Length: 619
Ligand code: ADP
Image 1 (cartoon, protein in one colour):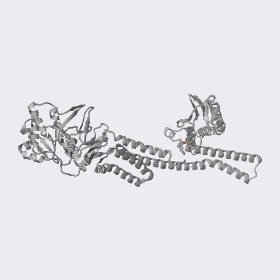
Image 2 (cartoon, helix red, strand yellow):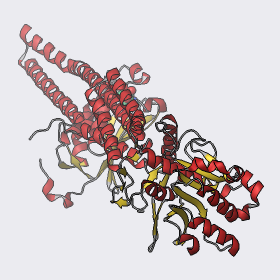
Image 3 (cartoon, protein in one colour):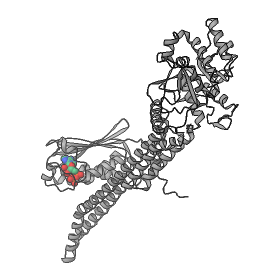
Image 4 (cartoon, protein in one colour):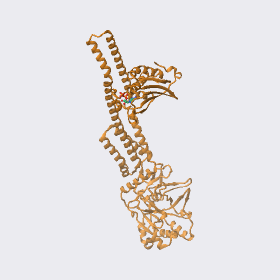
């Protein structure tokens, strides 16, 4: 089946667009991309806060005032016990304590705390994972807890900002749910039903899938208002025990909020300083209560989006041109930038960097490729036009001479009664000139087809001697007319190629040497074998050229001033054909020249040994 669109150019284009797409997608996994994705996330977080609702929990705080009034930081167990005792009067629904109580303290104090815990309904204590070891609450406290939850914040965060919390933490022997989640299920009075994709608590489904590290991360939707969750300190409660009524039926998180307790402060996407750890648990609780979850887009959907952007970018620059193409590409780029925002509003966290990089890279690649190729195509057609003009020029110039001779001779023959001898002379001349014309046309066509890549070179083998001697025979009479001796030096080496074209080239160099030399000079042709190369040189003692002229003589129609002044006729096209012929034979031209001293043109060609290619001779 023919597929005209499946050409080199289409494949190259598709390849370049695909490569930039791959770079775009892969760059999404770099740390720079993570940083940019995080910043974009924080920005969107700021732009699209959760729909405002009433708070569902409260904080009982050990703040600086509490420390000030009720003793130093080491007295926190006494303060906690006092807080729980006062809280009991309000009958809260659930009490979560965000203080690791793993160490033994003064027994009397622990006794009081234990007593207060025993009297607390739905108590949730905290445990802390250090390496593979859980710092569980002392058994005397733990026995009164309805649940023990972990206090781990965002352990995979690259910049220390807690954007998500692992709902589950496990070691080989023990696993714990997050403190906020345990408080939530106790508040609901339900059990946790888990599946690999989500967690079910009562009627609520929490989309926290078990990831590779099995920790079910859930994005915390912090409330934008820093005072959203009501907070009462233990000192305030101690000073005014009636405040306990405010906690009635509430879920209460107890913890240290003191500014000096910096070890337990967490950065949030709002970046307005850090908030106490206990508030993060309360915010997780609020997130669960609100049920407006943020879900990470799957890797597959991200890659799919990038692919779509890449394919569209590729198609835009194939199907459209100019402004419509650039406008559509602009629309595509805008779409790539805006999509993460639109999805965020729908509760889907879509990375920012990979789609953006993919769209930009593929648009840039597609646009520049098309631009470049269109330019190239234009340039190619321009060259083609020029070449054609030059060809016409060549035909008219080169062929005029033999035609004039033929025309003149035939006219003479028709008009006058010529002697038999004269008539024979004229017939010979017509015959010779028309053969020359035919040869010239053939050579011209061959060279044209060669440079077009249409013609295969013949692969004949011939000695340099045969080649040069054939040329010498034709050039010697020309030399004699100017009293120039055309001789040869060493003639060794075997060549392979198109003998007719090679003869045209060498003949051209030799006629040039004669043309551009004064009388009583010498033209010497030699051919030497040097390693695997044959060096065929034509040396004269003629007008020569300077270095600047030397650089241009292979350009079509270029003639040196000296050549013009010499009165010798020429078109300036011969050497360009010679160079093409030599080039197509895998060789190169070397020229040395001194103005007024002479020139030496050398054809350097690959040598061939007749013995090693006995079967390839095809004459
Ligand atoms: P033409 O001889 O028809 O002018 P060519 O392409 O054969 O065209 O040569 C280009 C130019 O190179 C010549 O016009 C001449 O200026 C210079 N040239 C070529 N061969 C020689 C030579 N042997 N000595 C000096 N100048 C030369």
